[in-house]
Image 1 (cartoon, helix red, strand yellow):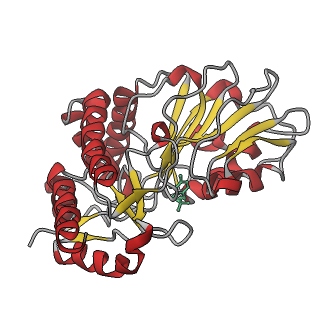
Image 2: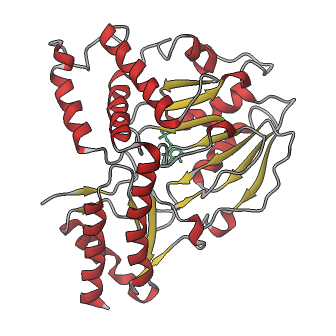
Image 3: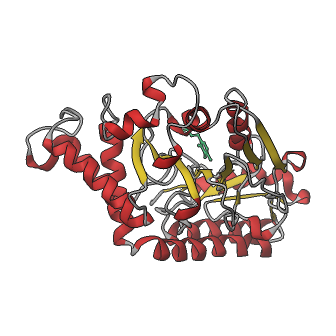
Length: 359
Ligand SMILES: *Cc1c(COP(=O)(O)O)cnc(C)c1O
């Protein structure tokens, strides 16, 4: 039976990427060596890094005013690295608190300078994206989480502002086009939509750097990695390679417009079933905030005791890891770029069969 991986992360990757990555573990580029044992300064790996960067620039429309970095430490390290490099007591960072990851980013920023939360949906367990807040024109940056992996919400649009946006795009990077010129920093842990765990893609507008009055440890200074082309120390060679393969796949899909259209269609099929099937209910209270990447839903109140049984039915049909995050409960189907339409159709069929059997 075909199995579909609905896990939030580490998450599904395109089958052809997995296959090629597997072959490269045995013999990379016909070199007689595994990708796992080659030098990060070899010509073979330099070509991988260069292609990965070129693909990020081409797919995202990222110009030379930005540096493209491949760092370690996860997206979680960017929670402190971004304010450490951009913010000091002469500035002010503003945040929108849309979920647990956003809240973690706020906590780190406070150690580096004035930090203000403009809006939060925490009191409603993050079931919607706060709107209608005013962005102070003198803010150093506005930090946003584009997609809230745990709560299943996603920013439909980025705010129009001259304040540089610092955005955690971990769970929807390269799932749709974005207005590059509004961004100061974009960061994304690879393991949701870009590749395996171990590398974080960081895109930084270079003119924002070098302005803070503090000592920044060498490894935590973006300029170190810019000057050394992400090879100041040993970068995560294999995760970067697999990300490069995934980016090739994104390009072959037709780029971000095509990927976005596909993601919209996929999500619409699943949300339609959630809305029509009386056994289920979506957890996000405003439809325009629904994530196209992480679809969160619960069993309707009168069927709550069937939750475990539904998860068993999912597994029996090959739909794996549909259990929701403990802070939301219920179910979460993560349907990143690589999730094929058939995976969604299979899950919808399980929901329909469940309804026929129980409702
Ligand atoms: C998973 C996730 C993180 C944490 O990523 P790590 O690479 O594990 O540090 C941060 N932000 C968002 C939105 C995430 O989904």
